[in-house]
Image 1 (cartoon, rainbow, N blue to C red):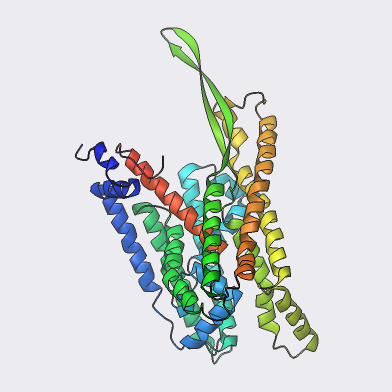
Image 2: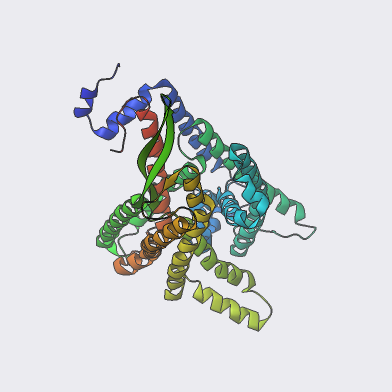
Length: 447
């Protein structure tokens, strides 16, 4: 081979692996294609919609928890109100909905058992569902921005119908274009395309985000000491996320099969394991929890100018409850995150049919009978380890609030969702590069 192993002792492991990857023509092509698609995404994120007050728009995004949350998944495009203002969030929403309703609809459940053709069909249904979700979310965002003065004349009235349709259609088209880019990356590049688009948006906003916090560090925002303490908290969060993302419980499995050799039947056995992740739900429970908790804020913003005094009072109460700086909001986020972690983990486990697939392949868990007993045993283990993952995600959800109170740094806010996305996507991409390198007998990123 043109590249000797001894060189790995003279260079850092990560740098050496990156050089090995770029020395392979096909792998280098995949990496360059992925980078090119990400550059196109960042270009699209700066193509603005017309008739937008930029100053009011930025203020609205900075002051609103709802808009700030959506801005994360748009890669900062919402702050510019570009054609990619929704990012891939409608697609994520549609994917989650499809995953949850699949066990409830026999036809969709049957598609999961039809192999690659069934998965392709299910993916097509997800694309169909993404369009109405994007239309609804795009129109709702424009209504919220209209109340801040950033955009005007968003209405279904005859006088404003066509401009409104044009803006919603542009935003929806931008979302579908990004979904297409993401699938191109998945097919021809490295890593999960949609996840990489979200990662690219988060990373692209870090310099401006940090710059604003540092420049504002002198006054009542907590000072340099507060920023240093916040950075330490962020590093601890990052380390905890890596640990819990990689933590798993390995259930031992034995396989036995009959082999006919030289006119005689022999029994062969092998051992393996089922890896059950402590945090098998990933960032999905956080998405559910934050979406539900910011929904009252959306309703309060919509009806706060109502002519009815009762409705205005209810809107004010909902606004107070859904204030991210308040304890009720954080408590609600914690409880919902824990609940959705159990819900999503059990739904995903049921879709995998581990016990059934294990029995079909001739495997069994030592000491546990195949079939229903195996399913019950795996469910019990999953529930026990999910407690750790659920409490961890719940704590991660409220750590930004606690960190802000502790450091008194208002200009910077840690994003647990953003950190989970970054860590998860980076680890997944590293594994894919690792697999490509191992196929060529190279050392990779992970031992």
